[in-house]
Image (cartoon, rainbow, N blue to C red):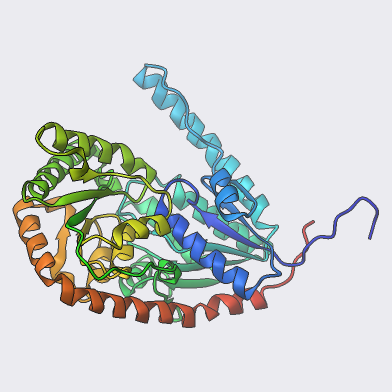
Length: 416
């Protein structure tokens, strides 16, 4: 070995995506797959290209670099000038990000997109954001001989043509594809991807440990809060969508406490926290006779901490996908107020599709009746939910061997 030079590892696995940015489901997916790699491939170095690299490094103990060069800028006060500066920043950013992603990718034998709704269009996302970064990753992987794996991802067929092209081509270039449900695999097929050899892999969160559920009632209902502004195609009416949703949620929480139950507010992303705080204040202000503990809110930052809160609840009503999933995993009777097909598919898998509601047409009277029915069935439902979660966990463990095979067979590369 030449003096002054460190030995270069022949194999390195990289995790890629909107990780460490405050979304508990995304980070839970990383946590689950990282635990698997450490158990099955302990000698293989792992690092990450993440939206929140500092959080990833501190929480998971792996090196991380920033996913995006563009962190936005301050407003000038001129709408026309702001638009021009934004366009310039985006134009420069996509080029810089493509170069940075390529530089990162070539250092790895395998680049993994770990779970998440990465290929979905259920939330607001611009083509030059996640879709572009995934496309850049896929092209870079093909150029440098890196194996790209998208593992147990969610997908939907986006209405925006450019987004659809970018996501579809990224999926087609991947060395390994697995989807977290059949509807995601179908959506990929609709984007022009040959999915005939792709597998359905249960959501990576099923691999996370769950706390035991106590055999007693608590008198508390969990209500999940989401910063809901509609999907990308609904951006023009985003503010009105948010106002309607927040009014309905305030009404619903008020009815729960008026019935003598306590409420624990739950979130699944850091951006939900201000919404939850405002909701709690609004309901308590309108009912000055209530004890402040009638509505509790203790923000968390991981799915494990979230599950420690929900496991003792009598029921959960939530919208964020992993809020719903992890409550079900813990055996907690759950209502999904969904914003995508993935919620319906998940609730069907657990045999509780009758407790599904649509966030866009949310009716508080219907939701209130649904909660009463759920609480009445709680004792019977909980064992059923735990059985399904156990089956999904085992299926995930069995099928993760496809990822192990990819890592084992990846061509060893040296950094140049």
